[in-house]
Image (cartoon, rainbow, N blue to C red; front, top):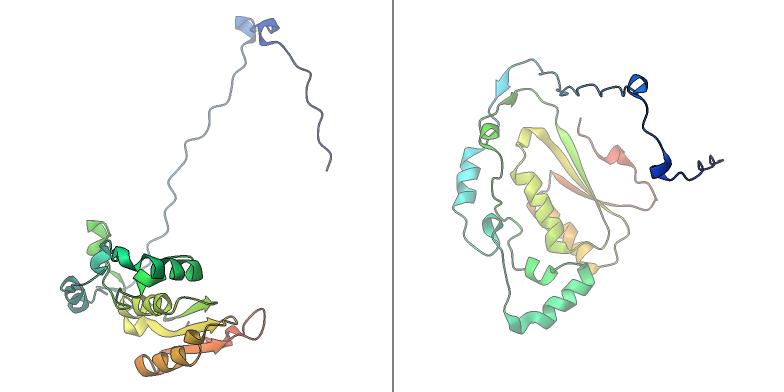
Length: 201
């Protein structure tokens, strides 16, 4: 690709302003209009699970409701080992429940919003490689706990060649015990997995 030559340098003090009758008019930019999506038509429904929300509010423990969590200074060496292994504080993560509560950070107007009563279900796909065991489970719990059951068809965990033992039989056993009909673990043997495993709309 050819580049255009730079114009010769000009001393700005040597450049004369145009005469009044030669003033250049610069076009004014058009006012940007706010883009809004069309409102879908149909019956509305309150999808909130108020019982689960109240149960979340009652939870007490390390890291609950998004509160900061710390460890004892005597455990710093173990903390550093897990940090080097995972790239984050996996040692502290192991002490926070995989089924923890999270704060509701929505604006007040969003808390009373209703959505279409008829919505397609979905398959959620996680692709992971040597992922911290507790963190992976916490992600699954977050989806299961905060998605209406009729909208969550399935969760697929695609293991992209992990080497850690915790992500082998231990993961398979945990998933089979907790979510036998909802979560599948798939071993990826190709660069691009076969997404036909997922069945959501």
